[in-house]
Length: 352
Ligand code: HEM
Ligand code: FES
Image (cartoon, rainbow, N blue to C red; front, side):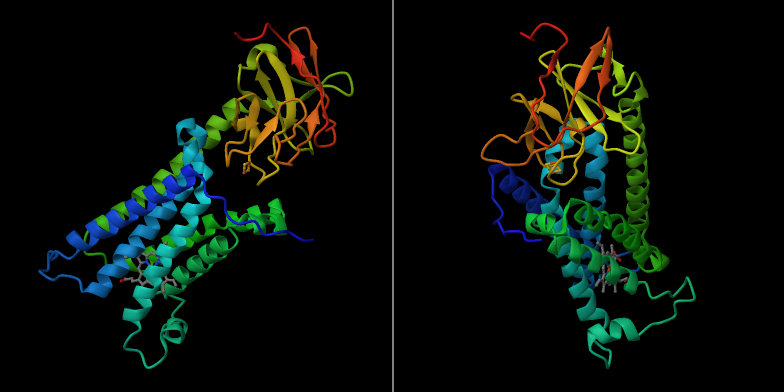
């Protein structure tokens, strides 16, 4: 297998995304240093390295929470979709912030050990059998290593080289990283927290993420509830025509096969695989822009009739045959080779 390296192509929206993100992080760290240095209830102010460790650590935790919230938010409300398109930049910046936290922690917490900091990290505390006093730092290290692997493989080169399923499995490990960070906090900083702020932020973040994922799953079940049922072979019933809204898709789930997205555009129906050729994004959750199916994840586009990306792009996806039986839409579950033209079926007059 070989894959050519293509430099990241910067667009106005990518630059704007990064500028807003970095400005937000700088504002957070500045405010943290300004107010975090004030004396606490015990009259003591934290020293500068501790302040830096806390500022970057809490910033990294919040960024990770936002990264995981973007997916369900975009499913629940399409206005969040622009946040999804450049989520990889978010991930790389989160890793850089976590690295700053780790460097501040290593430089200070292990500064007085006889061992070099990296050795002290693993050798200083091995009391794994207890909750209070558990070596929580190891959990932070494991989370950081996951973020590092994700950041290092975030470029499209790795996507092409590893293939979308492997690449996606690696990047799903972000949920594992989040769980490890929650463990890092629960077994470390939260055990002797002197203020309610960190426990409250941690609890609200975790509960919000769980609720958002549940709400997104429920809403998706409600819109995707179309399970193909048998009709006369080779056709399966995809649904009643009235269920297909203009400009949107219905996703049909087939037994042992990729789901199919059936789009209604300009009162014509066309069917393509629901799986985007870029990173397996759910095309049926996208929309039709300028007559092209637009993936909700990173905006790859495909023509409705033949599943080909418009020139100069070369991606192609599988298309499917459709038929009408009265007001029932029928689908041939056998995919056509990617890029095969299928005449869309007209179901009403062209939209003015
Ligand atoms: C090599 C990796 C890491 C090391 C060596 C490390 C080390 C530490 C240490 C020594 C503490 C101090 C705990 C205390 O004072 O009780 C800490 C706290 C913390 N860590 Fe990490 N950590 C790492 C990774 C991470 C990652 C990946 C995140 C989040 C993305 C994170 C978020 C936090 C937070 C939020 C705190 C609590 C800060 C506070 O007390 O306000 N850490 N970490
Ligand atoms: S998955 Fe990236 S554009 Fe579709």
